[in-house]
Length: 103
Image (tube, rainbow, N blue to C red):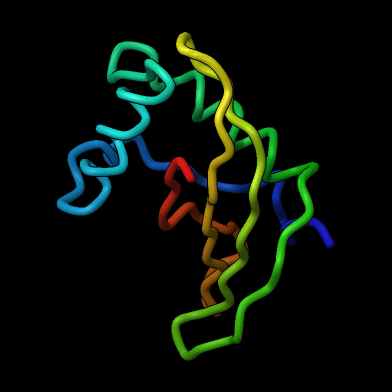
């Protein structure tokens, strides 16, 4: 199955500064060569994947429904598989990226 409402998915630009997300950002830089200067590259790949990559639905919770997807991300240093987790909250239609990291 595809991510429900994937064409409306949201990826916030503040992820590299997040207390946990910043560690993931360091891996993107080390393994893929993706930095704050070229973060639009994986962001575009994430948004494209949100519309055409199969997801696994997690167990629903009071916070919403999680969906996981694995797909290759290309950067200046090569291509690596990533895991992206999206959340679709009960009060919102648009799924939002909650975490993403290089596997």
